[in-house]
Structure formats: C-alpha cells, structure tokens
Image (cartoon, rainbow, N blue to C red; front, side, top):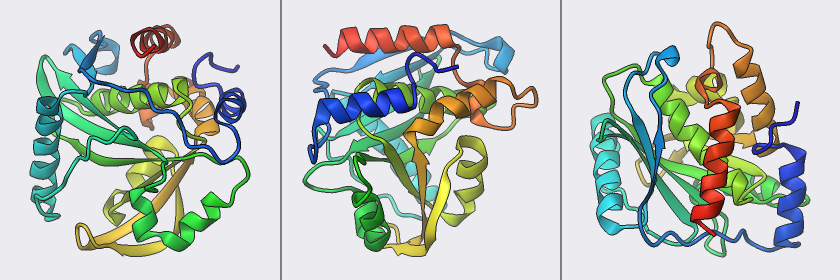
Length: 255
C-alpha cells in the first residue's frame, strides 16, 4: 500500500513536475528554529519525550556543530568541521528531554554541487547523468545518547525523510561513511554501496559512497512495520498517523 507522504514514484513525479528539467530543488527558508514534539513511544523502548528541530538560528547550529566536532574528534577525524548555513543545507537536531542527543544535515543539490562530489567525482557522474535524477546528501551526522539509541536514530532519520519528500528535495539520497559504518547503513536503512573506498581529504580517512533511492523508502517502512524482530531502523519509525501529522505541520510551518 502506498503511504501518503513517502509515496515512491508519486513523489518522484511531483518533484519532476515542480522542478522542471535541469533545475535545482527549491529549499524552504528557515530563519528561526522550528521544533516538533515527538511523544514518548514506550513500545519502542523509549520513555523519553523527543523533539526534532529544524535549525534556523546560529546558536542552535553552533550547538549541533559542537556535538559533531566532539564525536568526530572522539573517532579521530579532528574537530574542525563546519556548517555553512547555506540555504541548500538544512541541519536537524534531536533532543531527548531537552538534552541534545543527535544531529544530521540534509543537503539539496545546487550550483555548488555536493560534498560527495569531491571524494567521489567519477561515481557521481553516473548519478548526474541519470534521467530526471535530483540528488541530495546526508552529512555531519553525530549522535550521543546513553539510552537505547534505535528509537532516537529512527526518529531523526524518519523526520529528515519526511522533510525531504514533503519538499521534493531529491530522488537519490547519498552519503559517504567510514567503512566501519557500512553495515549499519546497509542493514538499518537499506543504503547500497557505490564503487570502492576512497580517502576523504577533510578527515583524512577512508570513505565509502552509499546510495538510497528515495522511491524505495516507502517499501522499507512497510517492511519495517512487518518486522517483528525489528532488525532495521524502519521498525522504529513513526506511525502513519504521526508521519502524516508531521508532514502537515511542516507544510503549514514552511508555507
């Protein structure tokens, strides 16, 4: 059954008609923080109230960047990461009972290109030649929570997926990850490997390009709903009712 928000080919068709051939996505302007409350979901092992914020204020982005740099430094990637604040980049933060526990940035394609273009130029040419492809990427992902993290991670990724599909920001989602995290993205979110390992000059570490078709997300969520063993993050995603409520609020808030 097609889900109302993450609707596979329906979303792709809407994106193509809205953007026009060769056009970059229209990214909403977020001038002030916009926070969305996510009720505690005890059935998923999370009894804390979560909130997801679209960051619009410099102080909130600085807090997100501080988390990124702390976690990257712990991994040995250095502590000199940056968030540009450009319109093509939307940074999200997750809080549990008002404690910052995660952040990720969604980047829509623009005349500047994407960060993955720098590390994987030849692989990206394939995607840029795909008919009607609109590219976007995830970057600057960091999480720091003591509680069971799957419900927190699922809430953050699901919210980003809702935001991206509601605003028709892409048909193909890309991310580059350290090789030690490849299995997580394959098993937990359905990403696929593209090509071999390269060295990311920003962090001077090996990197793997990974890809997820946006049209595939609805099926992944449906499979997650039917997975009693909860082997992927999709099993912890929002209910259809909550997904639709968030989408409606996003459309109203960013109108």
